[in-house]
Length: 481
Image 1: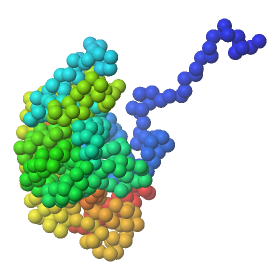
Image 2 (image 1 turned 60 degrees about the vertical axis):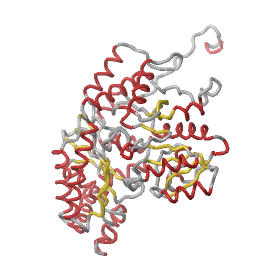
Image 3 (image 1 turned 120 degrees about the vertical axis):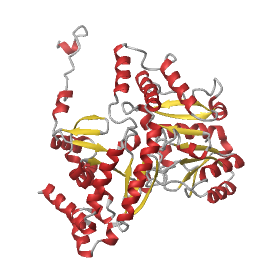
C-alpha cells in the first residue's frame, strides 16, 4: 500500500511557488515593470502611459512635493493623486503615528469589539462638520463611500421616494451603484446598472426644480460640489443654496460628493461651506487617509442616519465591513486631521490657490489662442487648453495624428508629457474633457513651486501650436526608435 493510501501517513508538503520578493520588486527596472504589468495587470493602460512618457519612470522614493526616480531625478508633483496627497508624500508626523501604532501591537480590526480609534476619528469628523452632520460611516474608498451614502439616503427617503437624481458630467466612482450616477457612456459600457436614476444639468437650479416637480418619486439628489472628472467645473454662485432650498421644499435628501474637492482643498474643509449650506450626507476619501492608507467615509445628518439605521433591527443592514475602521488606518486619519489644522494647510490652500489662479490667468492673457479657460477654487484648478485639431495647420495635424491620437483631441496630454520630460513636473488630466490639465498639488505647496510650474508652462506655450506638436512627435519617434 502506498503512503497516499495510508491514513496514518503525513500530508504531502505544499510546494511554495516561485514568488517574487520585496527585494525583487525593488530591483525591477522600467522595462521589467512594463512587462509584468502587461502580462498581469492592464495592458491597454500601458499604451497611454507610453504616449505620456510615464511608463519610463520608476519611482525610488517620495517626500514632500517630490518623487525621486531611479536615476535620482526629482519630479515636482502637481498631480497629487487626484487630491489624495494633501500632505505631500510621507509626512513625518503621519509616518511617526503609524510607526508608534505598529510598534505597540494595538487593536487593529474593529469587528468583534468596539474600536477606540474608529470612535475617535468619527468624533473628530463630526466636530469638523457643520450642522448636525454627526453620524459617520468609515470605509476604504471614495466609491464605497458613495455607495454607502446612496443607501443611507435612499433608505431614509423611503420606498416611495427611491429615485436618485444626479448631475450631467458627474463622476462618482466605478462600482455598480456609483457608476449608475456617473454620467459616462464609456465607463458605463454595457453593464446593467440601477434603473431608479434621473439626470439633470449640473449647476442649473431651474432644471433641478423641474425634475423634482415632474417626478415625485425623486428622494435623493447627489452631486459633486465641484466636478473633477468634467474638467474642474464649478457651479454658478448661489447654486448650492438653491439646491438646499429646493431639497427642503420638495423633501429630497442631498448628498454632496466631496471625495475630491473636500478635505481643505478649496480653502474650506468642505467646498460647500463657501456657500454656508449643509447637505444631508457628505462623502470623503482620498486625503482622509493621510496619503498612507485607503480611508473613506460618509457623514450624515443624525435624523437621516437614524431613520435609515437607527433601530437594533436595522443597524447592520449596512454595518461596518471587515476593514471599516481598521486601527492603523484610523490612527493615520486622526493624526492627519491634526496636521491639517496645526500646519494651517487649509489656509495655505486658499492663499496658494489664489496665487496659482492669478498666475495662470496672466498666462492666459499672454497666450489667448492657446489657453481657453482657467478655473478652480483653492488648489483644485483646471487649465483648459485649445483644441489642437482645430488650430494646427492641416499638414502638421496629419503628421501628429500619425503618431499619436491624443494630438487630435487637445494640447493637454502633449503639454503634460513635455512638462514631465523637459521640466520634471507631473500634472493630471480629466476624465471627460481631455483638453484640461488638472492641477491638484499637495496642500503644502509653496509659491516658489507654483512659479516653477507656471514658468515651465510659459516656456512650452511660447513655442506656439506647431512647434509644440512637432517637438512632441519627435520625442515619440525617438522613444519608439
